[in-house]
Amino acid sequence: MKFFADTADIADITELAATGLLDGVTTNPSLIAKSGRDFLEVVAEIAKIVPGPVSAEVVALDHEGMMREAEIVRKIADNIAVKVPLTLDGLKTCKKLTDDGTMVNVTLCFSANQALLAGKAGATFVSPFVGRHDDIGFDGMALIADIRQIYDNYDFGTEILVASVRHPIHVLEAAKIGADVMTAPPAIIKMLVNHPLTDKGIEGFLKDWAKTGQTIG
Image 1 (cartoon, helix red, strand yellow):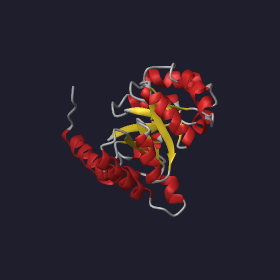
Image 2 (image 1 turned 90 degrees about the vertical axis):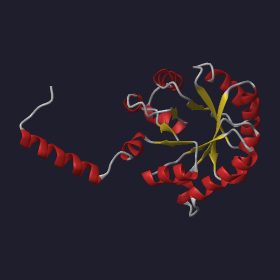
Image 3 (image 1 turned 30 degrees about the vertical axis):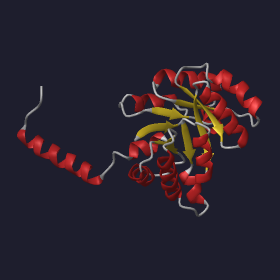
Image 4 (image 1 turned 135 degrees about the horizontal axis):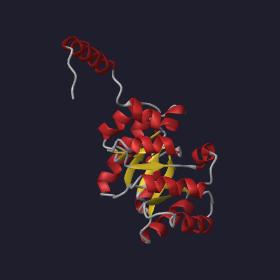
């Protein structure tokens, strides 16, 4: 499973990229607003740090407007994935862009039928929002399982990018189902390494080592 960071915070992205575990970054208008910086500058800086896909979202709602914005966004760097909403105009834009060789992330997916349309439109990624799905009483992971089955049935090349990840269990379940990518806030990604028995084991080893009076090097 690929790991994307869902953030526009340069410090967090730099820290995670240094681990070698970060495969890409997703941004959205809300995350850019939170950064307080210029959209194009932030995306360009992220694209230099992370060699993998960097999703940058258009804000126009009509096809023509999306294409105008996409022309600007995709020129930022070769690893930009233009992010469009899962609407008819968004799907039309997706088809146009992917036919032209541009990566596209179709976002705000909340049903398997929507994901089916994204696959038919040639999306590089489709982003089902599991956390927001859970919030209104539905099973976000059941949605991921349905999309996985449909894509496998028809051999779609679109990658399932699990978004709106709220906790490590979302990551675990998505991996078990076979999602291609998950994107999560840096804090969630860092939580994946935590386990009390790991901490306890380190503590015990260090105490025993101290008793030897030795040093390494």
